[in-house]
Image 1 (tube, rainbow, N blue to C red):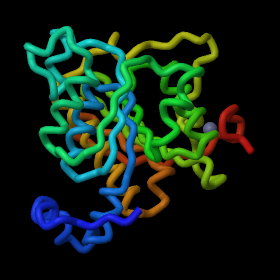
Image 2 (image 1 turned 30 degrees about the vertical axis):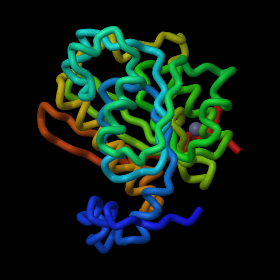
Image 3 (image 1 turned 180 degrees about the vertical axis):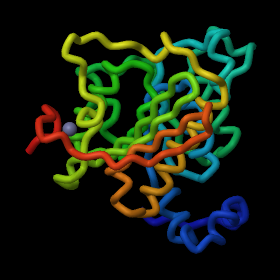
Length: 253
Ligand SMILES: [Zn+2]
């Protein structure tokens, strides 16, 4: 697909194009990219808005949930008047205000083993902004099998964790389940049962958007063997090396 940057877009994205690390060729890569955001909550709203601002070409938003009053402390795209509306619908409306050229589609359904292939088939990047482990494990398995790049973040209280996965590309790269194995008793806690301070959600979303831009621009492949942990209470950020679990049921060869 050939992309020409119009005069208007040249000005709009001039702060990116002027950078040596991006330039015209990098901006074209960004504009050609196709991204799926699963979950339009605290992480998804921020990730979608920043990716829309960078000028990505296509975004698919998936969320079956409606906006509630208790979401408004962290889900930055939503206002009180939106309560009761579907999250993906409102987020689509708002990111089109940021970038009218963006090709945005929405799916107002829960991702299941039955529909995942149909829904995610056309996206190269899958951003997991879901709030439960059942969905996270399903997305990881799908991304490994279908060779999709997975970017994942998790939030809890003052903490953010961000990582990206391409386990199918190298025997050294772990998958999500290598570093977050399923508990043997099957007991899993959902994220909405844990507390969260407002700006931490935004920070997680921003970190995901930065990660996607890095990968689009062809950054060092070490990114797929890293886990970034930010503790917002001590203001400490760490980068941990992660490895493949040779016993992992998903990505073992
Ligand atoms: Zn694995």
